[in-house]
Image (cartoon, rainbow, N blue to C red; front, top):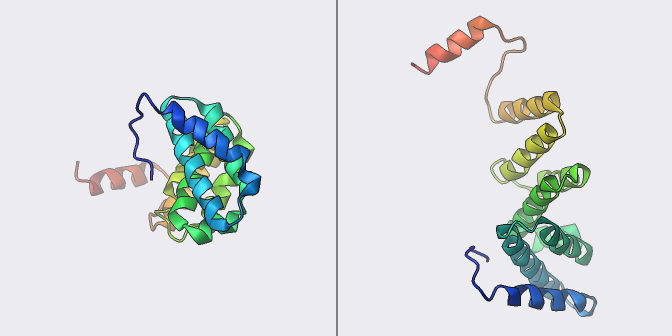
Length: 170
């Protein structure tokens, strides 16, 4: 698993990953494909550290073409979660909002608990805001918080705000 901190030799990672991607059609087993998913994710994260969004997107795109969604999630849940959350963030950052939304929806479909999907939910809220869809972003965030047990009045007024302030004991 990638932990960060690139070195002067990180270019070797990009070369190795490109070579494996070039021969990806020769991978015979799901295990080999999952290993390449890990390598592409690691390489994409190094690219992101260098703010190279397009190369990061390309490594993640190649991976999505390589293997079925179910295979990643069934083989290694945390890898699927990290991979699809990272891909959603990258595509949002590039302004590919529809693709980002699709990737977020994949995370929401396969994640097993609310905390696992928080990164993807944050990406969705940011994406909606980035598109100027502030009402939808707010609605999405409120629905998310209500799903976590927070209560919001349907029509907030000054009394609601005062009550909330007093309950925090300012």
